[in-house]
Amino acid sequence: MIDVKNDTKLRVLRKGFHETELRASVLMKRQRKHYNNVNENTLWRNKNKKIESLTDTTNEKNNITENEDVKNENMNFFQSSVGMTKHSKDVISNHSIAFADFTEINGKSPHKSIITVVEFHPNGQLLMIAGFDGMLQIYQMSGEINSLLKRIIVSDLPIREAHFTPDGKEIVITGRRHYFYTFDLISFQMNRIDRVFGTDFASWEQFWCSPNNIHFIFTGALGTLLVMSRQTKKIIKTLHISQKIAAITFNNNGNYMYVLTNSAGLYVYAMNNFQCVDYVEFVGIADATSLAIYPALSLVAVGCRSGVVSLYSYGFIQNVENAKNFMLLLDTKTLNTYNGNATNNTKTINPLYSIENLLTPIAGISFNHDGQLLLIYSKLKENSVRLVHVASGRVYANWPQQTNLGRVQVSRFSPHSGYLVIGNDFGYVRLMRLFFYPQC
Image (cartoon, rainbow, N blue to C red; front, side, top):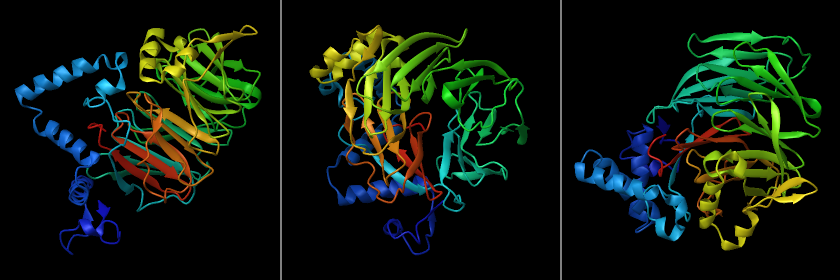
């Protein structure tokens, strides 16, 4: 429930003084109606009419046939121009984005520290929030009433990282300690993992889960990577890189691991034998801090300390042809930057384009589930979060409209991009709804 009595911006949506709280779905409908009454012929209004029309006629046979035809046309999305597809129901506009701000999801139980973790469960029905205060909260995302399902207090561990395992059965909780915790979501039992056999690692604060649910990857000092078995919680391999590690990610099936160094070099490891199978360097990145990939289009996004985020096409990720088709959406000036250049036997890749809207170090970047949006944020300046339309490289000017987001510490899309959450340095997590995506 959302308080509409004490929030001066939401009081106008009440139908009477007896209304003090509204469900999120009701509030969203009233916000749309109010906005449409005040602003005639707006993009939001037109987009919502399309969404409502699709919702109301889902079960009608004629409209279903029509929608299927539209989907078939959009299969060739990346083989056509933006001008030909900008009105398609499956292609998001690059001019403005329709959204609603549902305020702080943890407004009644804020953290007493900065937010370090926000993450959706793989099924999209749970949201995990955690912070340095050792509190971890799990919310049930029903769409109407997002209620607190479970609160966990880890008194001896300031939480720096926490992730759902890909199978959704467990949460791994780590911090700057020689031990870490796992929480079983089925039995609701906490288990402490003390000194791991085979290593004297003093801190488990930073780690990644492989999508195939087989490995955990922990980073150590001086470019050390510890590969841990997800099942046994034992170290099975130690990898060494001669440079400082900035970020790690995987392809969709977890067969390959991509390790970004602060010098903008990308190491590619095959996870079946832990051998490095490729190495490239990204041109235009001085001090890399963040990494995101979208394998379906062979896209790599790299953020750096100067606040610049650059997008690259790297054919090794999946299929070179997909990347070439994607480039038809870009300015023709970028077409000569696709093929990697060989310099001193090292492959280099030029950017397709760069985003320069932020001026402080990039803390995180991520693609949404269909690769149409790119989320970027920085921790060192207030309200430093942006949404980028990937195909055109445009930053949405109408988002965020709020100027009270604080310093964004972490931000994530939901599995189907219907929700976007932002955790800040005040201990709050703001929930936003992206109307273009009907499923959350």
